[in-house]
Length: 285
Image (cartoon, rainbow, N blue to C red; front, side, top):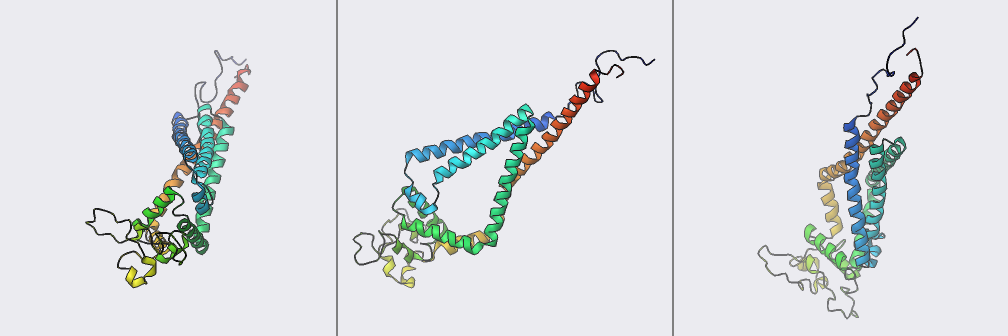
């Protein structure tokens, strides 16, 4: 007659064995915790920016309020990383699968946007031109927008969208005879050529520049538009942009990989527990 085992029955790997790796579990937890905290900062900054200033000019140029965009992205990031945090800590397969699926969708959307931007580069260029022209029109309406345009023109050594004469689209710089503005036919100071040893910025250096031809104006200001400068910069910095895109993609792929590994480990652990539970009642085990 077979002899009955003494003590509690154990599975094929022992009662204390676990398929769930603590390294994978807590690596995924702290990975999500980091981005969870970043998402809260994004939401806080977005709410602060929305409450502290009106963004009518920014919305007219960008069609989307940057503060609202920051809040929306932050909330989505908060929800996704929350699923990852709790799912990894509690070993919850449902939350981990939600996290993995959402992260995969975000990655595919980013990939599709990059491919579409490359395939329809002419339309993308047209959209950029529209945004820059709208920014020129609303230059004096929003201080942050004004500082952004000035920074871009100084950084890329350009003026306007296509040329410096695009500033005539702005009501303050418009060259029509009935324009009462003191800045009539002028361009912003950020269009001006600057000497290396210039200590004081002459903010009136763009006075009357639109009334000059290209050769005359070129002695005092940048005459080339910012659209071509921006396109040339993108073409000459493709490796940099590719590195940034890769830097955004790697954390997403790492999160997807870790979550799938942990999900498989949890499923194996559930099977092991079911096996042990089944054989605890077996008197011949």
